[in-house]
Each structure stands twice: as C-alpha cells, then as structure tokens.
View 1 (cartoon, rainbow, N blue to C red):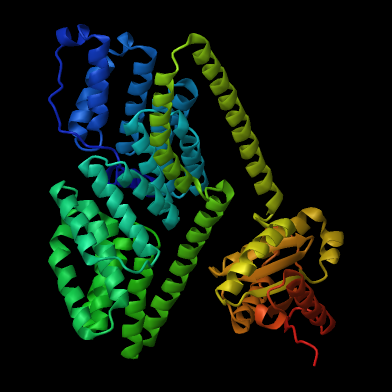
View 2 (tube, rainbow, N blue to C red; view 1 turned 90 degrees about the vertical axis):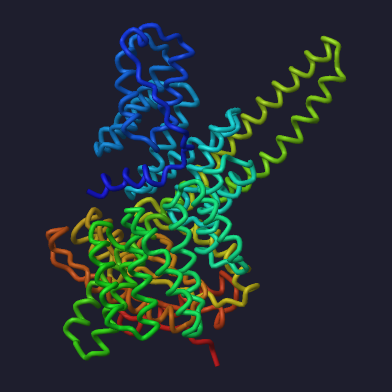
Length: 595
C-alpha cells in the first residue's frame, strides 16, 4: 500500500518541466509515414506531458506502440522508459522498477540512463529504501561531467534536492536547489527549486528568513498553477512562525493565516499536506485555549495519518489529545494516546536513523558545493579556452594541445578512480560490518573531528564504554553463532531507544563505546541506564532456542570531568567500567576524579 501511494507522490511532486499539451493523435497513414525526426519529436512531447496530462500521455504511448518496430535503438530505449513510467503511475510499481532495472542494463545512452536513475532514486526514497535511493543518486551525480545538455543537468540537480529532502539531508537539499536557481531555469522549475530551498532553510532553523521572500515564492508558484508547491511552503512557513510566536496576538495572526489557506490546501488533495494542516491547526487552537476545537482537528490529523505511517505531525496531534485528556482527568484515554505516541515516536525516529545510516554509508558530504563551484568555473574556462584556440592557428600546435588535453583527461580519470576507491576503502575501514556501527578506527576519526568542534562551541560531550557481562561463557556454552546474535541484538536494543544525540561504536569483541554530543552527565547517565535496562530485557529463547540472561556494565564520563582529550575520555570511562565490574556487574558507574 505504501509503495503505491509513493508513486502518486512522485507524480504530484515531479520535478520535470510541464509543457502545454498538444493534440498529437495520429491516424494509421500518418503513423506509417513518420520520419526519424518526427518520432523524436513525438517521444519528447510525450515525455514533457507525462506529469501534467496523464490521459494524453497514455494515448500517445498507444500511438507510439503501434510504430515501435520502426524505432531506432535509442528511440526504443526512450519508449521503454516512458512505458515503465506509465506502469508505476498506474500503481504497478514493482513491475515498473523491474523494467527500469532492465532498461539500465540494455540501454547505454546517457540521457536514458540518467532519466531511469532519477526516477528510481525518487521511487526508492519515497518508499523508504534510502540506501538504494542514494545509490541511484550517486550514479547520476558521478555522470554530471559527461552531461552537456542543460535540461538533463537540471534534472540531475532537481533529483538531488528532492532525494536529499526525503532523507532529511537539509543542507544538501538547500545546496542543490540553490544550484538550480543559479542557472536561471524555467518559471516552473524556479518555483519548485525555491520551495525546496526555503523548506530546507526552515528545517535548518536558519535565522533571517524574510516574509517578503516567502511571499515572492508563493505568488510566483501560484502564477505557475503550482498550488501544491505553494501550499507545501505555506504550511512549513506557518509552522515555523508558530514555533517562534510568544504572544496570543501573534498566535491569532498565525491562526488567521492558516484559515485563509484552508481551502487551497484541501484543494491539493495531497494527504500529507492536509494532515500537516490539521495537526498545525490543533496546535494553534490549543495555544489559544480553544481546547475542544483543538481536539477535533487533532483527531482529523490522526485519521488522515492512518494511511501515511508515522510523522512529526501525528506525534504533535497525539500530544494535543494527551494534554486535553490529562487536563480533564480522563487518565485512561490519556494513557491510551500516550502509548500510541510512544510507538509513533519509536517508529518515526527509527526511520530517521535509517535515513542517516544510508546517507553515512553512501558518503555524499560535499557533492553539491563542488558541483556549484564547477558550474561557475566551467563558464570562465570555456571563455579562456575559446580565446586560446583562436590565437593558435598552426596545426602542430593544435595537435600538441589535443595531446596534452588527452593526457590531462587520462590523469583526471585515474585520479577520480583512485579517489573513489579510497572513499570505498575508508568507508569499509570505519564500519563494523556485523553491527553497522563505527568500529574503533571509525570512532577515533569521529571523535578527533567532533571534540575540537564541541570545545570551540563550548558544548559538553558525554562518553561511555560498556561491556557485556560473562560473554565468554555464552560463546563457550552456546557457540559463536549465538554470540554473534547477542552482539547484534544489544546494538539493536540500544539504537531502538532513538536518542538522536547518541552514536555507537564497537571497540572490539563484546566492548562498545557510547558518544553523546552536546549532553550533560545526567543525560548520558539516564541514557546508559536505559540501554542497560533494554539489554537486560532481551528475550533469547525465541531467536536462539536457549534460555540465558544478557547484561552489560557501563562506565561513563564527560568532557567537563575528563577534558576534550580522546585518550583521557577512554581511560576514565574504562576505569569507571572496571568499577562497575568490581561492584557486581550490570550497572552504570560515573567516573570520579581522584581527590
């Protein structure tokens, strides 16, 4: 159900350029008489309307199907891509993905490959397969230097800002949307890129966003009949203002603004947007003291979110209902909603963790900025090259230039391949492949970058080491297969606690590290205790067929105690861990400095 809904969102939030629909119907005589150029035009026109006029798009595909035996190889590849797109749009997404994968293998034309990977990246991201989405995105970004067609480049950059938005990489979504804006795209593309830009800025909580800038984008999108995009930005902007509102008067103005947009939001028929609006209205009314009305909107948001999974809007709506029932002393209802909220939060943060893990695996840290710099540099390089070529008229000089250029390209290609290999090896060397968390080297690199940054920002870093109790006994008695299951299960139990500030690493064997950014001693003590309790509660019989007990001992410290020195943090946490072991195991001990 989720993936079928996903392709609907791909259609609604398509980044392709819409064009005016033309009547491209052909009779049998006209079909048989089409030249190669006319077939190219018909394919291009059909592609241009695939997101704006599904009826004509389907009709054109039928016309093209009747003459596909006369297609060239490249035209057939283009036709197969459009057919696979139609399958997905009609709801048969799994079959669409399969066909797109086959097209990737059969067709070596760059324009087709990029279109296929762009569509796959969006489908995968929306359906929750974040690693495949980022892999498809990486494939097209690596081809950017081979693309000369401006429309194709814009397609790649647009895919990037959409996918990065879906995996919560707001800075990268901002960079790529700005990259599209810099290249002076069509009015529709400018609307979509600008919406993603300002949504990213809002999500990054950037200061200094001007209301006049938001109004300019909203007006522009409405003029382009892009009401969905206008309302996506509108509700995000209202949400941003509500979080900053301090007085009842400000909240009233925000309420009026949302009321004025209500019909336009409902007219989009976009479920995510309508749920966002209802949840937002519930929070506004609660803040204004209109509790009964707030409850009605919160319930509407919950009903709407039933088919959409877990989101921040669902959690916010549940908060409103919990607060209301607690205030009316309806404790059973409050408790029921509290249980639902906790389950929604666990699933919501688990999804965020999956996105982060997929992103860290693919390593897209600086791609957007480098492409933006490349775009600006290429314009200058072209002008310089044209001037040099005009001044060099002798044939032998031209030959030398071509020779040097070939050597330079070869060296760049070799350098690029080496760099890609180094990135792969670096990723492999930093990851523990059993648990999918940092290994000792990865943790050391992470700490050596993070500690100076935190010290400069005057943020406290909390650090802990924990070790499984009597793990050798489990290995010896039940075997290494069960031992491996235990290792993976304790990491899973701790990660499911969904602390966004926590990072885990496996130091080796059954020993692990816990790093918490911008966290106090009390924060890590509470979280370490929650981890200890979760580990202690792991059920073993169902998965292993054996009944045994799992526990862990923790030693913790912070930079306020041990300073911003990685070795000192390790030593002090290890001393505290030793004290936990000495005092009976299965406990959390805080490092205490000597008197």
